[in-house]
Image 1 (cartoon, each protein chain N blue to C red):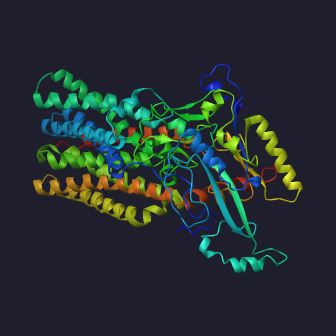
Image 2 (image 1 turned 30 degrees about the vertical axis):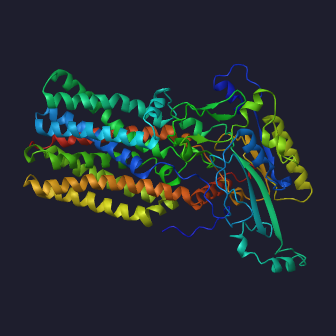
Image 3 (image 1 turned 180 degrees about the vertical axis):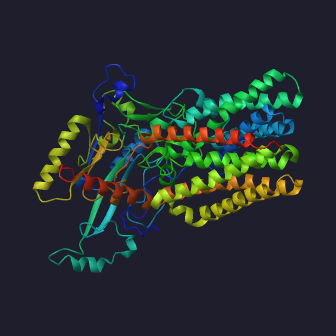
Length: 307
Length: 292
């Protein structure tokens, strides 16, 4: 429970600028990146353990998701040619710059992996692409957490420790879910386990993040983020429980569980997105924690003349 | 040391770092700076609306407002802004003028806000295209032909300064009149300011001048005068544009203790690396289970 905050502001106007990103584009970009990255891991595992149908589903899933995520990014930029400016420089201080280079390497690998699998040609090349995509996959799934945490937006920045774990878990549950829904039941054992473990990591890390956020967690309990978060929790937990309990019995439960997991992952990203926007729009989330920080510093610095 | 940022950014033999010292105690709210900025930089109109919140209809800095004069209407010295002009009963206010303590007295705080040209600038750090750069004068400028409208700088500014222009999508903010500096002129806003509330010059000199001004105000009994953004040890490494305020920063719409988000970037990458490793381990465990 966060006490009501007393604070001054300039006619209640926000201090921070509202993120100008379009919700569907950028939350979609975050969700699809997680789905793609974790799918590449699933693809490599299935490839190595001779589960061809699971491998194909995961390879197609990774290639499709990363293509859609790039489309979402370009749509948010407004013009395709603007993406090229991303590749003018390499900037370690910019997660978006590093992410663009990461995707520029990763996306062709997923497409090569999927294309060689579908056509059945250049198998050695396909195996190498599958393994390389899997090596980059975890970074693709988690860098987006740094992308949004490296901002002044209180609810995003405040969660910078736990958010990568939330996104890693959410990516795993989505990738497991997609494979569960689309691959034949005989080969989906690893996908099911990945979905359940991912859901546990996602929900656990999110719970921890919310507890540690303090005042900045408040937007998660209100309005649209609250509804989206409820939906995400029900879909993810429900999907994972259904996946775990039904085992390999029947296509219908697997399809239902898989769909719920993918939807749950997407709903979580949307909840995170909207909660951040809400925290930027209310000056309270900027002023009150900073005031507390100043007060704590003044207490600690008592006696050395600091004011 | 912090003023060597131009050299750190690759400029050989840069001129001294310059900036603004905005002394709000002498601002009269004439908005000449807003107008001069718009005129000189050919910044488009961005909405002519009556907000009703105060006499300030510009509301805040934005893609097409690079100087913004805040009008803070207060009842009593430390009350914060009153919620809206409608809440003020002018007759009550007038009657209160007779009271010796002046508790109900109205006071105006006016302050011309601008991009802070931070020593550690969040917008500059996160820009993925190199569109934002550090000039030889130590200021931060956006190159509009390279900006790709990703909007990352907008979320990274702890002051809420830079913004995307609707219909254009690119990010815009104060350039500290980079074109004028190049030919030895002062920025348009400082030039137009009739009370010298906006002072332009080498940052070292401005800091001395500001310290002197605060001391004189304190001696004159204006105990609430304080500097904001002048400290090179603060969360953004000190501002290239700093202020003398007569109340808490948040009263003017400024964050009380801004921190550049990239300060935590190493920790973020470490956590992301740990999370990525967890994800890989999770995948490995998924395949290590019973084969089925």
